[in-house]
Length: 371
Image (cartoon, rainbow, N blue to C red; front, top):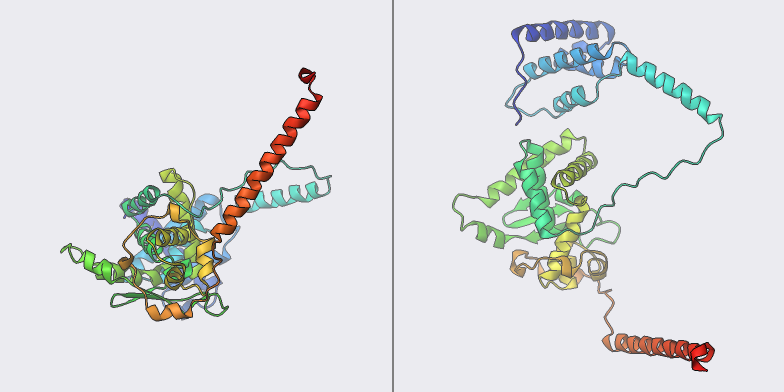
């Protein structure tokens, strides 16, 4: 974790005085302070929600730092408070609008109002954001994982674990963040189970081979690492306001990580494509891949996800599955007609030759050198 800012005793006393004054003021202006477990929490909520356009920018910053200091002092450092963690984050990123900001926004609105009355000019095309890709080389994947592992904050290290799970299991992003372990089996509630596109109500993969491999390293317990990652997932989900907020922040971190490591942009769904490409390179059939990634049809992953040439070959035993699930897969894959393809290719080549011969004959007819 980054080192905390060292404040002088005088600064701490100033912040304490301002925090007490704000707590008193919030209790007088906003009813409900007596119903709150901690008056400081009520004061922070009042400051963030009801104090826009009240103070100058410097005063807004002073009060935010004072309330942050008081809120941290009131909480137990050995416990995690999701709601209070969100308040601390808002004190840094979502402070009330200052008087200067309100004045500026008012002027901007007036200018925009005047511009609407003027004839509109054609604006130059804006630069499009780089598209998220569907594959990435293994060297870039390892580089991205090392980048997040080297970061000091816990969320970045948790994202490194997310990448490892996602690039091996091939499940949807919303399924990865809710996975659970039962012995050597990893399970998660499926997202597309109700619309006919999912194979079953839950995803399931047996990673017993990974446990056997990890058992050779006496200092590492794979089960404890997985359980720790699973235990932290609900904490980050609450901190970022639910599954959608969590995935949005993961994608933002991935975007920043790609810029820092100078690789093309990826997103959480990129890792699903990477995992399926690795499954194809490892020799899994279309039906087996459908079972592993919980697809109803064996055509979906075979034609729309990952390419075998971009995958990395691993031993098939690393990903185990229930063979009974193969009976649930619907066979809709299109079979490759090799003879028909060769005949169509030969016909196209013959047509191209006839076209070239016709062009040569026409040139010889009109060319002066043929006289």
